[in-house]
Image (cartoon, rainbow, N blue to C red; front, side):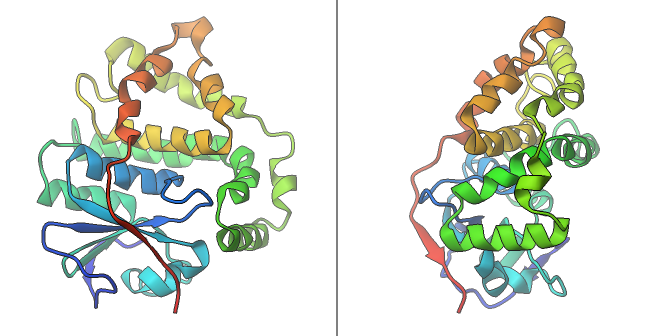
Length: 257
């Protein structure tokens, strides 16, 4: 992952007050699906930043934005371009946005607590559902992206995606989501308390990914803790889902040369 903003020749024209956002292409034109790209998209929209999207298929990522992550064989999205400055990785991007577009703030109550919650999602929540969701991803990618995803993930796992997902259910998220449900019940209405923060965006991005894979699974998750603490996650979800509403914008697709 890139940990800094880099300058490089721009493949797309931009202005100083406009950001170009490189997002992962899927089979449905103009629709976001990646949890990490959702983080950047929602942060841009919440802050009211003017941006446009360049949609990139998986096999084209390296040729389009590889210069932002030197030495990395498989560079990742999201990436943003702001004038001559490029920033890769959703965590680096939100810090850049906080510095250049500080209002409204997102890293609440502190950057440290936000980073802790992000790590909890990355190292606890994501692994709990990764094997369930990974076999479902190729179905909503563009054809080239789907082929690339299957080939690279099966090489990484050493087994087929179907084998990886066998016996996995979305209920594996119940235990790791319990602290989030309890915290929302006692200290909500948002994850960080009384105000929307990047923590809400992190979890909402994950739920958007699940929703793309299987819509009914999201509603299962929202009601998982009803017998313990009621439905604070469902109430929170209803409160924040407006963050996913897309802004009208010009968009384009990028392909490797």
